[in-house]
Amino acid sequence: MALACLLGSVLAPHLVAAQEPDLIFRKSTVFRLLTPNDKLATYGIDDPVVDGVACHYTVPEKGGVAGTLGVAEQTSDVSLSCRQYGPIKIKEKFDQGDVVYRERRSLIFKKMQIVRGCDAKRNVLVYMVYTDKLVDGSPKNSTSTVPIQPWGQTGEAVKCADWLNK
Image (cartoon, rainbow, N blue to C red; front, side, top):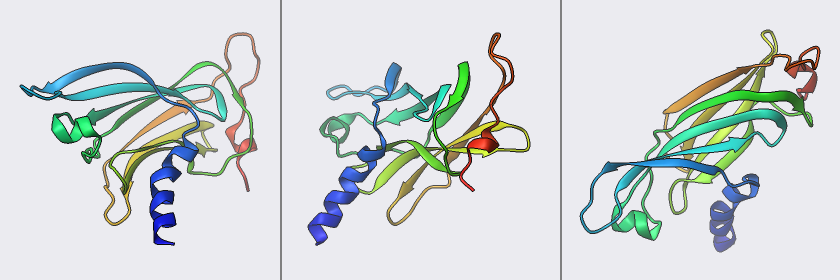
């Protein structure tokens, strides 16, 4: 049973992440002579439920021996920016705080999550990125908003409140 729980905690973050993020670019932040440098990496991801919205996030990636072997615990510093890039079409109802994307940030216990909500009063999609850990999470987070606007000649904008589960 303990083995099943351990495997579940390792594999569960990848079940939500149906898509792999697109690496946009990396920049070195700490030079290391014999092992890979520490870097900042910027990725792009499309919202799987909302067509026309993309989020870009930047995360630190540790180099060194531990980073190379994939056992380094990554820091919780993450920045996020989401934008409308085409007509918005919401494909299914969603709950406040639904996970858009999730990835591991340590070997077992830490994960980064991008979640979505709807500010119904202002008709704005709200995205938040944060990291959590089985025992001790982090208050570090970043928020980005996407006001839902008509696109081109498409007419009236979608209302995100119409797509919230009640």
